[in-house]
Length: 382
Image (cartoon, rainbow, N blue to C red; front, side):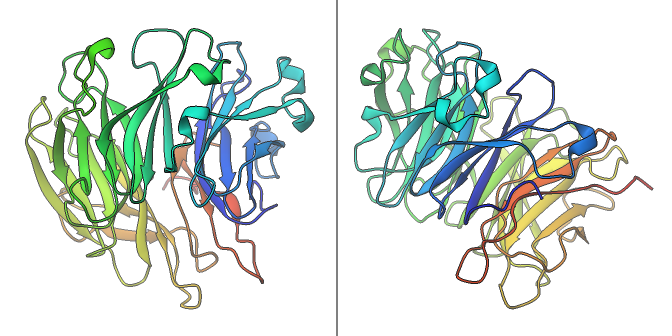
């Protein structure tokens, strides 16, 4: 366990904060109303609670991500809030690296351009226009939901100068990846959109290529999962053909959907489904990685299991002959403790050469704050 101090841990995002080549974590605690950063303590202490700092107060926070927004060498944090808050917060890190864990040295500000009655769900820092510092691609949910990007000004600290560019309608953005989907040399947006509507499903938004003259909307190309309650997704070459595929979990039919890329341009896809068994809950997140070290890609999966049903919420999956099989072998990771698991990172946290599973558990209520930010140690390979 990394931390269970508050209620409602919601998401884990990784970056190397201090240059030690170890993964550090940003997490928003939605019900607790805080955003925290956790520093990897080194392999010897990795099984203890990690050193951490509260970067700022963030009511209704749904996502937190690390980025050096002002290019001063220190990782700041961007928090996205939904609910009644409907703001994007910038948490400026201390100017001295030695003060990083001193919460009194952090400064939190609201990004003014985000105060437009939108519930913000997920942020992806990226250099999109080739100008100034990193820009921010964000997705949202609700009646006025959009996906778009905040353009950084010459001085990123001047938050009044940031500009919001909506590029597509949305319903409930779950995942955002920046990928060159069509091989034309610029970054497109790959996203999963959860709720019913014209943008529902997994699709990619085509970068028009000229940031100074971009139209309000980017062309949209659907990959799959239209009409389904799709959650988190991941990308990777699942079948070894050299093309990057997409996998997503959906809870309408309780399936993991493999969207197999059929061309380099990202316009033709074949869809395969993997059944989610009744021994676990409603699908939430999926991640690709070689978990058992046999050279073949596996999947890690989390769910929202019933709080009183005794079901396990974290598994890894392996296929037998080919990944197009609908029945994969499910291997229990978590046991019955915890039930509202979230986004996954597969990363070697203890330095033993295999992939561990990092996630969070958002269970909250009068009797439990949940497991918080946790990781599951991969046992030694057979």
